[in-house]
Length: 210
Image (cartoon, rainbow, N blue to C red; front, side, top):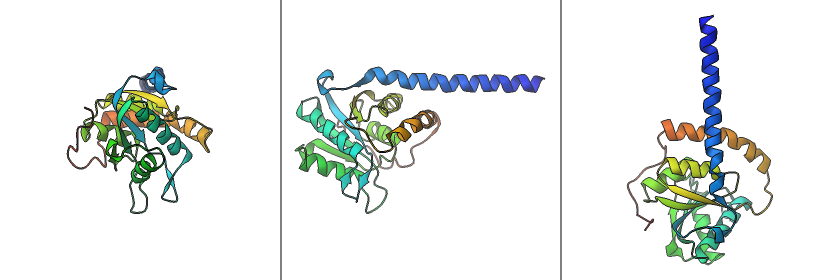
């Protein structure tokens, strides 16, 4: 009987913890904006990687993130842009494609773009932005469903954040990504509380939040 009650208590505590995490993260939706005009000026906008095609073309989701980031820059809402993504192989570099797209397509000056090659996951991007790039305040650029988790993660790692939605169209597999987001939220909690970044590497690079 005692073991049964212990098991019940453990289950109740676990469920309560899961729901409190979910509610806490989803509460960051209040910090997600739909228009650049709604945002205060920041020194840095952070763009999260989201896949490239043929090693040279942004995916639809990433392309929209870059478009919105360029609008932030040209509207004077962000003085610089930090692009962070996967650079896991010689023939696959999200950050390089992101930078090239911002410069060539959206006419963002190259010296206003900073490139982080270790952003394989949201957690990596956030902790590297803070620890290596000195970012303490930022506008986060991503799709709407991803932003509450990104904002929450950055907050827990020392970056006061708001987000702007780059959900400009329907995306292939978007429904799948939205369902996976619930699991990703709990993974983010574990990362922030218990994990060390696998790819942090290096020392402080540059204080771009000034």
